Length: 318
Image (tube, rainbow, N blue to C red; front, side, top):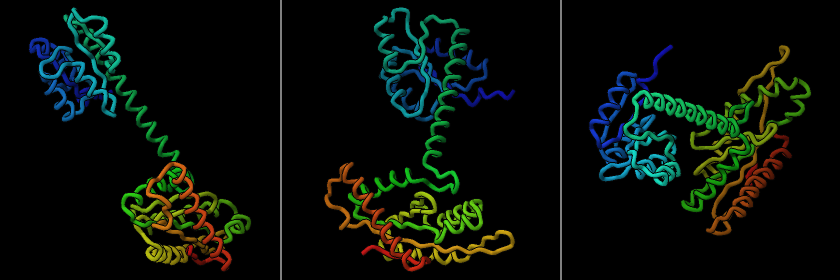
């Protein structure tokens, strides 16, 4: 089994150089990488520099005391376990205070070095569990905001980003546009050629949307065969140019079923968010929801107008 101990960085903070050296020796024998400082001020600087996996921290330190150091470490987003080293005179009240600010474990001087190693292993194992949990949470969040079929963002993500874009507009006044796109006669396509082909159409359409838009733009599957593009910092004319590029690329898409070649067309509706869209400079949660609903409804109404032209067309709001 591969030894990963060298990847684990341990920060030792103790003003007693003899104690610090004894901790260094036992960590060195165990194969851990360690860094030592002798006051609280150095501890905080070294912590930010090396981002250790564990801190072994004395309570009584010059410049900045151990409890304050621990509190600042625990205020960081990433979890770092702290073993607090105290003298035998430490009171129950002091221990409770330490636990309340996040201390993970205590060692009382003089301590057994075998016990130190056992507690070190336990804390590093705990840190590993926290890291795995953090990765799982990030993966879950990513999945919860992603459409599983096409790989683009979903409706939930779209609403979240529209909230941000409207707030940004309130600060900067930079116009943006919302485009709703759907596949013409998609139900007929599914009924005639099957849902597998329909799924393939949606996946390839999503791919075209991703390759045609900018990284700053937002793409989301809104539902069924409907997709939404939020063209950031783009007015209606700029968005029309973007949609024309999409139409040209989609015309070149080819599908095949039982030897029969199939082409698709799309329709789209555009609405823009500008000064007329913002009723007040004060944006509340209720007004945000109302503005998002209106923006999407306006684009949807334009899409309906495009559909009335037998599809393969685009319409914009007045």
